[in-house]
Image 1 (tube, rainbow, N blue to C red):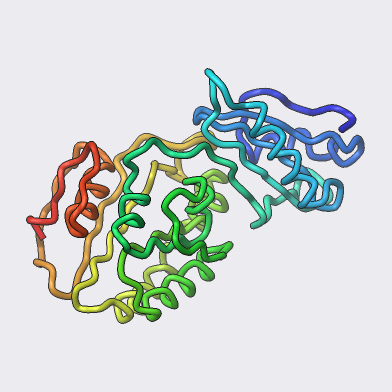
Image 2: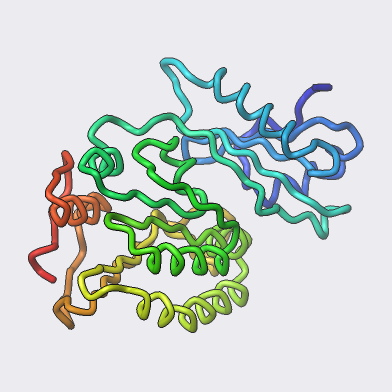
Length: 270
């Protein structure tokens, strides 16, 4: 490579505005970090082909191991011609370190259960415990593939991530776009519910806040939602403020007869 641009802590949307045109002129990829343990590499798809960007990220992944190991290296391709219209594409890819032992996904797999991951989930877990990795690159595709997986009558867990809320609207502080995406998901939610079996449980939550009305472009610190639905589950149960996201993991673990190290199951409450 002819060198790099950036090499600073930055917002992914802002740094491509600041350095994208220079990247196009020079061919130097843009590298940056954030508050998370991540190292991100951004490049224009017409300047650095996707396969080459992925290769660069794999090299970076090998460099960033060791005592000060970085949790994820993320390929961040984008398109556009000027700072006003640069836009990150759906070809993002995560290169993660394997999760700690005792993680829920391999426990479920070892118990003979299906672990179906949709969207970026499998790459975040470095494939650990994943029995099926289904490609989907935006909210609509993810909803479609989730419904397909439900109709395939798997036995285990289906783990989906609706990436547009974070990538397209949260970090970009696009309140109107976020609201429209919520309305669209609400309109499609009955399709997911209709695909559930009587003994299925739907859990909707988030891994962090990303308030599109808050200043800046980083994650925000509000509590995340926890919405749980099942056709035979109890109605109107208040699950309260949980100790951590691990409560969801422990609930799933108890349902399938395994146990993870942390978390308080709420399975008995529903």
